[in-house]
Image (cartoon, rainbow, N blue to C red; front, side, top):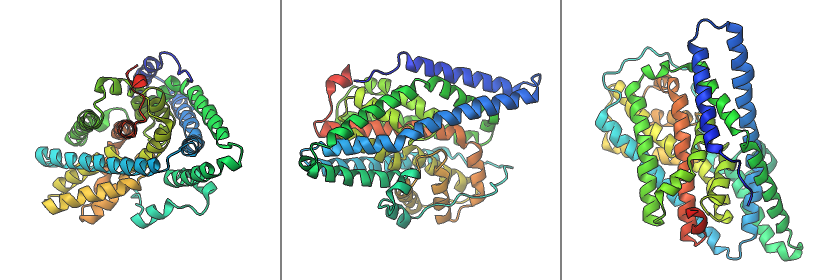
Length: 416
């Protein structure tokens, strides 16, 4: 087993704290020269955070490809792959439906948009959504190199499964060529550890970049919306996932959340499920005991279709915008919001603030004012960080459930 850096969680939290404090000092201080502030913002925070995120993204496609191919090529029972796929997709879509329903219920009770008036101007350009047709078509790439270059994870997963199946069937003809993919997978896991070693510095730059750019004033706007959304995110993360873990596995919840803290911090700092894939994969395999055959499928798929945090935002934002516009949504429309949030989550890119793209689709469906997205975007940055932490926690929970149901969860590692 490849050893992780020591005291990583402590160092990441320390980096986050220092970045937050320094960013706040630079944002609110008037005695420091403007050029010094600009230099630190551009050449320390912006440059450092961009390098760190780029290094993480650098590993996504090769790590997913080699991990998935090595896992599938070593399977002796192909039926288990179909079972894993069915269970994974069913669980992801179910938790997303629960997430948006919970958001709509709490939004209906506490009414975040009632009595709200905003002077925030609409964004210059509204994001464009992708239809269901294009989403399905993108799963089957005509050019796998282009799909890999564009980080189209569903296409990469599909090709990796096909390649793994072909390798599995021809292993006896290629002198166990699958062993080479095993070794390459190990090399990339070591690369993950090498990059994770710089995580405290990367998190310092990411948090500093956010605070020095926006300060903390954005929370004065739409305070009730922000508060309720954070509340629902925490309820979903600690109540919904706890319930399904206990229901399907009876594993220790304290152990699960304790071992997931590093992944959650990573996701919070990067705001990208995709960028967090290397860290999530390593954690669920080495710390939670999930078999690599399961982890290498469930985690990349989850980074693409498990958007529980985004679904919560879409539900609360729809309620918020409808209420501030004086529009009452019917029960049937609430059901439609749930369906749309679940369906559009499949096509939501695993990158920062991608949820605002699919929010456009939902607002258009009910004739709600698109210019109100300006309010959502004004407070979306920190909320997007929290949503991503919820998403990756859900990825790991589903991985544990699927692995346990297939008898591929090492409980000795989990409880260690």
